[in-house]
Length: 77
Image 1 (tube, rainbow, N blue to C red):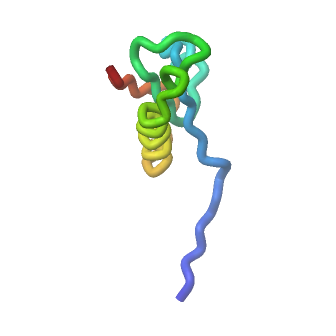
Image 2: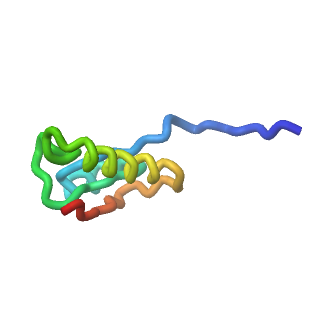
């Protein structure tokens, strides 16, 4: 027996450096790496290991339910 899956939209996650503004916009899922600046939401240039960690955490949020208005803040120091 094949299960039917109903898609309501495209699963979305936002990586942001502005958690307060992002919370007001209420995206379905949001991740904020702490202490990063605008233009560097995935970390330092030429640091693929850090960038992969951030993307991996962002993709992990897609597996959970939407949480509009909640921004997950995480340290990547």
